[in-house]
Length: 213
Image 1 (cartoon, rainbow, N blue to C red):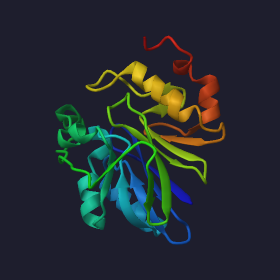
Image 2 (tube, rainbow, N blue to C red; image 1 turned 90 degrees about the horizontal axis):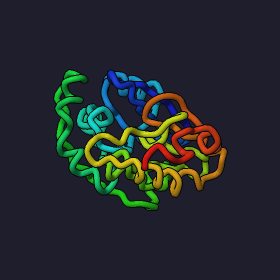
Image 3 (tube, one colour; image 1 turned 90 degrees about the vertical axis):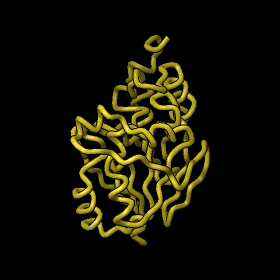
């Protein structure tokens, strides 16, 4: 598998291209803005996009979805519980980004522990509510790669002060869905540098208890 990261928009969201090196089939994860840069990276990689995957529906992660979906004529996958966020993009985020964000409906509403096969890409869905009600992570078990969105960052966790957020729920999601994975699993978050499950289990101060009570 091949992976490319593009930091898009004023919030520097990590948009990921993830594809099979042999078939060139792949997915676009969290196209948050700067669709032109995403298109250029797709062409540079020589990949064939087969779907858009969302870790959650906040405006900074979805602003370029409609343009990307229309260009490649591909479906959108999002977790159950994100319908409200997708249908009502935040006006505050629109103002910061400087563009209107289209209301979205996902063609595929995905569930916890669902295995999704998209072209040559196979991923397991991990429901990780807390940052948003329907947030998910995507796990490639064979490659030991986890796309964590805004659930888990290097040395931090997602904010919980927006509508639908919950600190205790977020920590519970991380403990039950992420920290049970092997130490060597590489985590690719929605913002910032990559990390590992083992590194966060050992060093992340938010996971030691007491922050969200």
